[in-house]
Image (cartoon, rainbow, N blue to C red; front, side, top):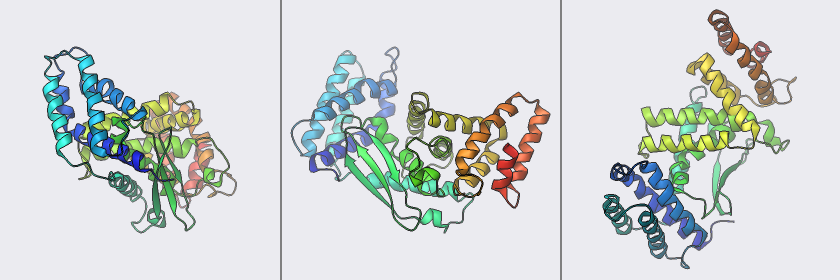
Length: 353
């Protein structure tokens, strides 16, 4: 079900406040320079996010965005008062930030489509390294649904056989922190790169409830690499504050891969990272996109091509890491020849064996 009026108002307020906070982030960072062990990221974590979570758990009884916004700002004010002496220069920045928040009309509904479009375009740009612009993979219609939830997550129901795919953003008022807002373009990029613009995948057949190591691990690493590369070297015009977006995307990845109980996500991510270290960026992308644009049943003898690749790449990486440089170079050259073969997928799988 879509967001009710109150949940929508809370999301609007969060996006409004966080969007302006991005513009004041560096000012907060400078203001706490004289406070030992403080920087802008700690200010966000200890003062902004903690206040936002308290607000999200029990916001004031209202559906008026301005009333909700004042409630959130009051809680943020209280968090700063608990952390800093009244003489701290951080309070002048806080006052300017609050004035900016209250002087600008709160857009409703919040423009989540902006970040959705950025994620979709970045994924399409990545796939155009191997696909034509009018490739059917890149032209799949997709709906975005935002629903209330007691947990925060993004999920995707891809439909790659002529239907419409759906990305669902489960919005939790108590978990939508500043980094959740900053990472919205990256979340959408991952959904498109792994689940919508990719070829048909085995997990989409409903054969497994576990997170597959290729699309949710290997391609998660690919999404991070592509996203951060674009932030630093070809920033989308509708984004800003590349340093902070890079920081929070990296923080999210650490939470997912290091703190995750799903060993398959960890495995896929780490193997992709190790593979790129061995073969270099160019060959990493050739192999990754070749696999991502090949359906799971590409080889009749493999029930799941991508799972078979993940099974074979791990011992290959282990072997390469122990070889002397000359022999490792030979192994890399074989991978290069495989992806340039007339049957690259079959050659690649055979070489890994």
